Image 1 (cartoon, rainbow, N blue to C red):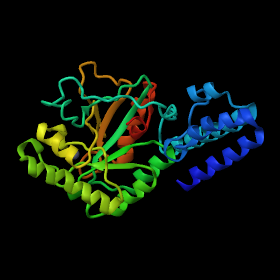
Image 2 (spheres, rainbow, N blue to C red):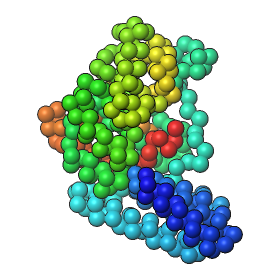
Image 3 (cartoon, rainbow, N blue to C red):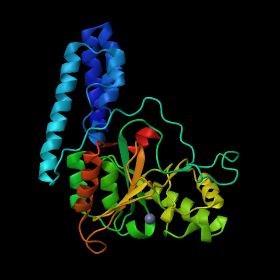
Image 4 (tube, protein in one colour):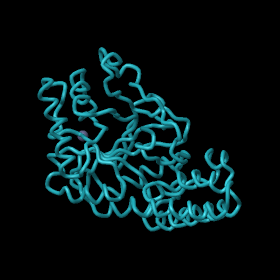
Length: 309
Ligand SMILES: [Zn+2]
């Protein structure tokens, strides 16, 4: 993140040189590029730019940088065998959406106890979806390179029994700006366990995440998407704020949909898994090609889930 701060400082310096109007513009410039390293190119016309009307020279250099980023993405797309260049996500929302449980996915006393919401879609009008990748069995270096080259954001949900043979792989992922989240110690069917056992599965994984990756996650996904009231109470007691599940799942050779319309919706959370040729007929990059093809064909960009939480 050092380079981001440096960029901010450079922007601020330039803005001061341009005088009063430019100082207003710096906020727009800085927020527009704050996630460049993880999030790829940004559209030139964003609400923040419109509000602050940056001076022509600033807009020129910002637009030029975006053009360069999208050009680099086009080269990467070709290199990785994509038929279309992935679309650039809009800027992170200035105001985070209020996220509650999906209808029918709440538990008794959900609101009274302020339990983490279980949801499948983030409320937004942005034409974006979020990619979430679970478990951690396959550790393919090509996948890390592909996602960095293409600047596609994603979020990983790790289960300790699958990642403990190579924490280093996921540290590399974290260092590339990916948020690592909690998916329990041993991937059990949580509703079959007592409150104390569930708490051990979730809080125990929080301890591992802190020790191995330096941070206790705020986001947790119950294995198989199965949970009960004790799951959410236990998760809350371990510091968890959100329990997203998913609206679509992508495999190497097909998609599965939760909703009857079998379509993507703005803010949908898409699930896939760290799997390779041992588990399915293809590689992680093969799966990502299938994912990006449908998402791009339907006019969606891939955004960072954490930008909306
Ligand atoms: Zn899982």
